[in-house]
Length: 259
Ligand SMILES: Nc1ncnc2c1ncn2[C@@H]1O[C@H](COP(=O)(O)OP(=O)(O)OP(=O)(O)O)[C@@H](O)[C@H]1O
Image (cartoon, rainbow, N blue to C red; front, top):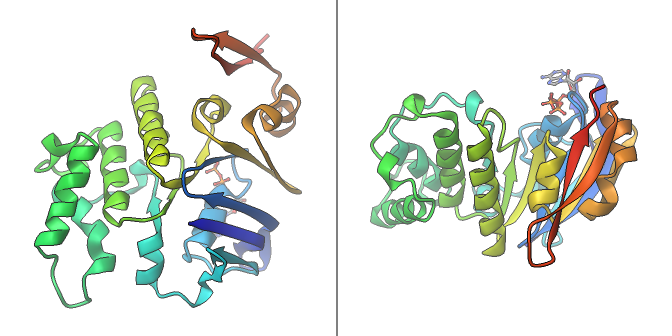
């Protein structure tokens, strides 16, 4: 599937937060959106997901404008992983993930055997079946993030929209979540995610979109995550270094200059 935004404008009340935003993300690709606090990343996601009305432009899935789609049809194609610390579900992990199946059963019907099997499979694939009977509200940040990814995957979407999937996670859990995102994209899922860490773009993205007041710059990580662009959007000096990880492979990393 290809999700395409063309000339999208979004905002609140009498004010546009963003306008003229165009990009696409396809199956198997990870698009990482970087931008400073308050630039409009969450507003853009809310608009893509239909929580806010578009103020201009259009969103297409495989060429078809999604504005006429029912919530149910939309949810079968596009999944959403919200920030884990904003999501106080007082249910067991199994039930939270089962909620991902809502788009597949009728308004007055209950989940069936097939829905439960899909939940079992997703929990196993993400290696979190040991959490199935735990209460979501009693999980750690990393565990919650994995459960929210499981809930979105139970929806069987083709594109996953992830709002800061590594926020509030310790270093190990950040890397585990990024590794999982990369595996999901290798299995054919398209991912569009935001991050506050430019290194994450080097670690797992196919393309990077740099969002700043005045527009969006998009391209390969090497061409977008540059010392000049990071200085421009975050207002700090950064050196980009390349570290060899063996077999002739190098990974770039950002080193901020704090003196
Ligand atoms: N419900 C709202 N009503 C009016 N303005 C809002 C609302 N939510 C956010 N804003 C404003 O819209 C702008 C963009 O906010 P948004 O949350 O999209 O930024 P962001 O890039 O996701 O920021 P962060 O990186 O801090 O999460 C900000 O100026 C913010 O104050």
